[in-house]
Image (cartoon, rainbow, N blue to C red):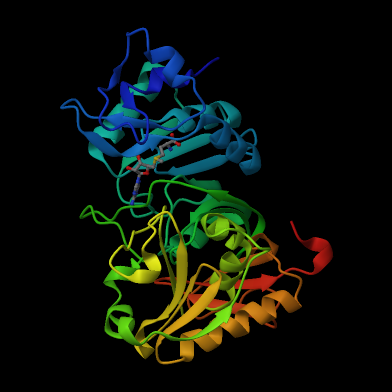
Length: 376
Ligand SMILES: C[S@@+](CC[C@H](N)C(=O)[O-])C[C@H]1O[C@@H](n2cnc3c(N)ncnc32)[C@H](O)[C@@H]1O
């Protein structure tokens, strides 16, 4: 192997094993650990963790394959960590191609630059900086972002050559992230394929991560209306037990995230916040999710097969309408949607009919339900 992964990591911990001592390079645990198909959390010299990891290698290779970087092309990686993928890409584009890796955390950017130098890689460059801000006016044939974004900068459209490909992990309101392969056509990025993913969230220069996920117990409407929860409707997902509910409901919730930009989803239970103070959430292993229209003080919570409304009926009514629509169109999952990204305000290529628009800071996301025969 030309660029072995372990040569790019100095010490690591596995996610969820923060209490364990770090695995140091040169120890007997290092190689077998480093070659498990798991992310490796980078550890600083003082033993604390970076908010970053060397991603799961099989998935990174899969994304690199989708990116399809060709000999002589220019590639940009945002979030390059200690530079392993930069090295792999530099090999794929060959001596005539170029790779730029951008990393916001100085400790990691320094390691990446050292690693690139150590391997004598001459067609790659590491820039310490925030996302697309420090790459100047350059254009790239390929862009890959390896941290997930909610507020997608429109620079990602400008920086790509016509016909170029971008891999973007996109966060949603409280739902699992998706990584999209998008092609630039005119002033629009159009999705070619989608996968579920789990990346470290993109951070701002001041170190904050945008949090668009609101735990239920902090929701003012929920708290205000806890006592007078009313109107219920039975709503089961193929008879699943409450524990399986969240996963069974995933096709519906990811559909919901695309067709209605007005709500934010939250979950409680195993993978979210546990609420034990309210009778319906007495069993912490149960899961619930809800639909919140914060401005309208309206909340619908789906738990154990029933939808309950808190506050104004708006969220409750929308929830049921979306559920009925979803059934009527054949219960598609979020993967049945195509995505187009444009700079805010401009319409996507091919018109806007049947598209659901979601405005984020800098760009608009236009989702459309693909015809049955084109679904993934
Ligand atoms: C999951 S790690 C990926 C590391 C490496 N690309 C890999 O796949 O092994 C995500 C990286 O993105 C970096 N990152 C987060 N926000 C960033 C930003 N605004 N600009 C540049 N890099 C950022 C993190 O510091 C972290 O190193």
